[in-house]
Image (cartoon, rainbow, N blue to C red):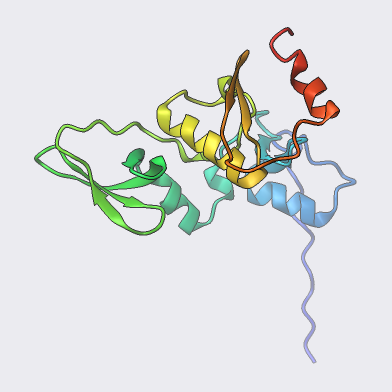
Length: 195
């Protein structure tokens, strides 16, 4: 029986990785080193954000160092808001820009579509879809597509019919009765515009 001698672990360069504590588990240290210092963290709302313990950088976008090949390919595409008769605008990835000025896109449902000649398509940063905002002032950009997406998704995912734009209140008619006019809810919105 042949035995192999285990080599000593490679020491961590403390000048580059000051955020790695000797008390951390080996798995946690490996995760940090594998992702070049990037860690996924969560806000109080449970939304992911990313922190680089080496550089101190913070971002909502998952860094490429943490993505697999499929994610990098998916995110690296040129994304736009494409007009849709039902939803107003939907996210779409540009496949081809034609010589006549039309743009061919692939929608998230897999279908392809082509823009009209001369039609301007607003750019979309995919990471802006990850976080829904109660106040639209906090959105990454105030374009029609992202505003409509935020309003629609807040209603569909969270059954939230009220969304603010600063001190202005937007209400979506759900066409059904919601148990939202309790004293607690009235107090919550009563002084919203008088901060």
